[in-house]
Image 1 (cartoon, one colour):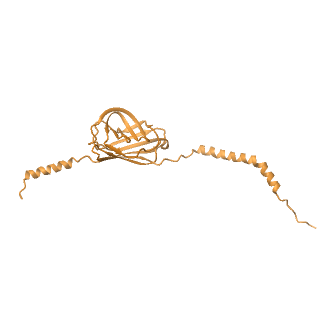
Image 2 (cartoon, one colour):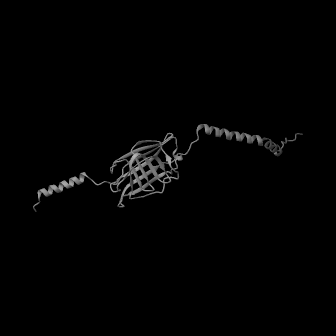
Image 3 (cartoon, rainbow, N blue to C red):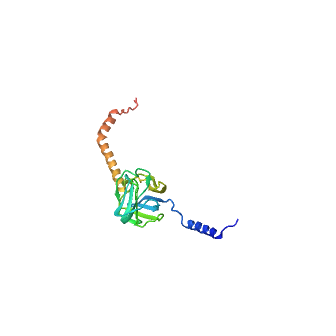
Length: 223
């Protein structure tokens, strides 16, 4: 069978172009919390597919915070774009606490309203562009932030209800408070003092009872 060389070359060119320009793939974004000394660090990394999330709205805001009981993570500053996601499904919260403000950001701007289906990214964000950010919470313990230990995952859908991204929040096991050495020493001394006081109060009565119940010694009669 005779084949047209030009048509064959044209088909190969289209195949090569399609391979070089793949469709945006589903992405994942994860947020992880960690106690680092006296501070808590939240690290976020990943990307989003916004190719079918409609047109974003350009806006301005400033918010470095998390809200466990109305799940939201906000690392936004100045100008950014806001997308209304097609849909989002997942846990109702990642803890019982309210809003906790952070102070210092290093890296990308990103925010997710997990209960309302909202996404914040920097102006000009392109699908698949890797985001990496660290938000620091100063002088606070994980146990005081109102979060619950666990791995929480939300599924994002685009405007055609097709599943795209997954968003994961990981809260590590909360440390059990350990008394400071000075506190433990004071507690020990306090218990010792209580014991000595109890002995003083009960001493005379105990000695009297012991004396009344004692059996006198009887020596064998000697002729």
